Length: 308
Image 1 (cartoon, rainbow, N blue to C red):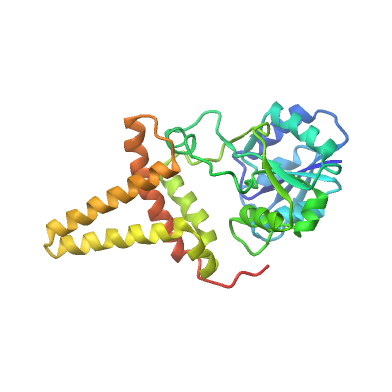
Image 2 (cartoon, helix red, strand yellow; image 1 turned 120 degrees about the horizontal axis):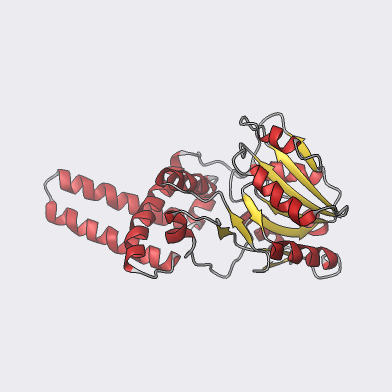
């Protein structure tokens, strides 16, 4: 039995399409179950899921972390292999074929976690085209939990997702797995499309501020994050340039602005592939906004000791 587990909080805009794509692929197979965890949604997500009788719906009375929602899905499952996807993911026929192949061998092969970085949406926005399409990967030391596949044996060995983490639960899951000798093997055959990537500047800002919370959950995690430290430095330089400018120190202020620009360019070239001047000008702005959003994450979550 194969269990496809989908946490959903206020996903009324996406969940029906996600389930339809799955239904078209699964058809009448009795060896696959689809479980949706309605994480106390307020937009009617649960009602949409109920229209599809072949989906097992778990309704949580109050909102929990996405890690806890995924764990709740596992608790209600009977599969020996898990596919974790998000409610705004559209799977492909390639993904389904790779999943079936993995499910057949997951109990026989050495313990591993697989999946792949999600692709941009089928009808991408200019932000997706400029930013998310060209994001570099650095050896893929973890699998995003929006497209993560593993056996029940691996899940139990790792002891599930850490429920105290608001974000970054996938990084933590893969890190603990590797410490136990479990391989993390990205596979491009697991092709899915992420329809939830931001379409507007405000959505982009909100997304990055949210993801930055993962670096503020302990002082140790903050200082282990190059992005968190770089964001703090970038904003400190920005504040310094404003202070110098207001104080009439124009030459010094422009010198700091030049330093900020150089820092921003170096950071974006490390993060992204730049393929045109137009894209460069666009991502120059987005990269600075990215640092600003990550900096504001410091005020979204107080430093607390991580609970496992």
